[in-house]
Image 1 (cartoon, rainbow, N blue to C red):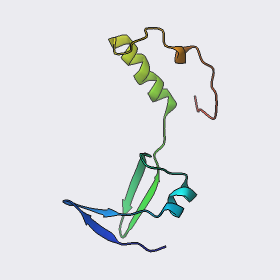
Image 2 (cartoon, rainbow, N blue to C red):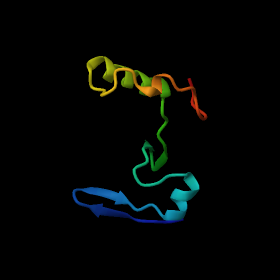
Image 3 (cartoon, helix red, strand yellow):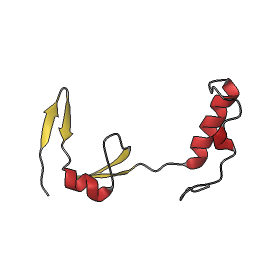
Image 4 (cartoon, one colour):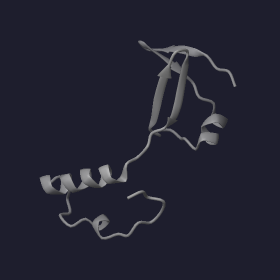
Length: 84
């Protein structure tokens, strides 16, 4: 599928067709990585590191940034395909 690079303010942008996004399992707000090499751009879903996310949540609790000092997520078992 072909598309064009267009101006968007001071940047350039590529509009991604709905069918391509659906095929990749992406929707608005999805985090992606851009890999640039000579003459090529590759877009892929950003990888999520569950350990880093949990560490950030624990740090927020330790700093007092969490409204609940004993958050429910600490007691929950894995519920999907989480990598621990």
